[in-house]
Image 1 (cartoon, one colour):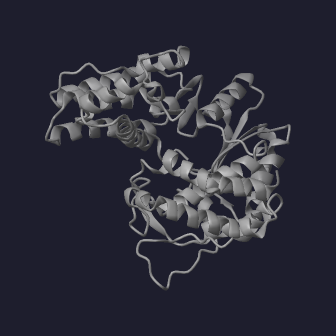
Image 2 (cartoon, rainbow, N blue to C red; image 1 turned 30 degrees about the vertical axis):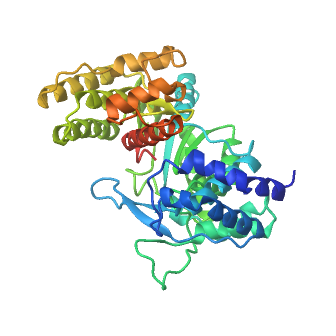
Length: 442
């Protein structure tokens, strides 16, 4: 099958409709055209036909993205997220699936906890004594379009496909659409389904070359680089890596000038990576990440306090979900799943105690699940435990119970298809909230 055949397969009307029903239909995000998924569904056939036809002909153009700002904390510029229209989201997801297929075996995305597991194993081996941490400044906004399309051209020669990708990355992100808005000449918009794989393609050569050096161990997760090496040549290696990134238009914070962003030092002095903190033989969670989780726990109690219904059952259900995380859409979601590689049980006991204090403070008599037990279940009985909910295995009756008991949905008159829709819509919202606890890790 040729590259063009694979592209046409992913942009067939049938495949595009599948993407809408599997990925888009439960989302509440609205693009610059203010058309939500409910309104889009009413004209689904027409919109899908237009998308499929224009994409295959090479004249589909993406609408401007709507700007959403996400706080990164005090004294930091907010992250700019681009929100596509519903139709563009379908196109971007299909484009992502297409790139995933043709780069299969060349690019592999590892879960951050699996990266951390490899880091832990390297620390146990004690092969290296120095640690280099490098942070790319403004990674996504700095990606050069010409350089990216050039790299894509090594595998994709069809100008129609490259034109579609160019449209996706050059469409401007705006708060309000104006006639004076111009296409972006640099940067990959953040928040798109295709953003991560395009960024990975951009760094493909650097990753390949650095992983081939036997004297070092190289890790990269998005824009965070970690290198283990011998202390005798740590500065030289850091300088080489900084030059490699600079050649493709990416700036790395200088370890000597901006040590709070990039650093070089002995491994035994301790270091942070992807929200984890390593020191002595302890692998724990960076304090800022713990604080973020605590804030989300407080917000759950606060929502209960000011809600009209004041449902203790719903409070407990949300709290338990925050503690244990869950499995949904074949993915492990939640704070504990992300930090599953820690060995700091004292931290987990302190979090359980913190929830007890919150229950007393908000005058609620509940017995929530515990971080300590959830962690042990995750480590030893991940695929057998019932302590951590697996929503993918819920049958229709279980879904009805969740809707009725915790969300107050009247299910008597609802058909099975509607039950499925209402369940997925609500669980999608709750699992999306779980991501808030691990935002800004990288």
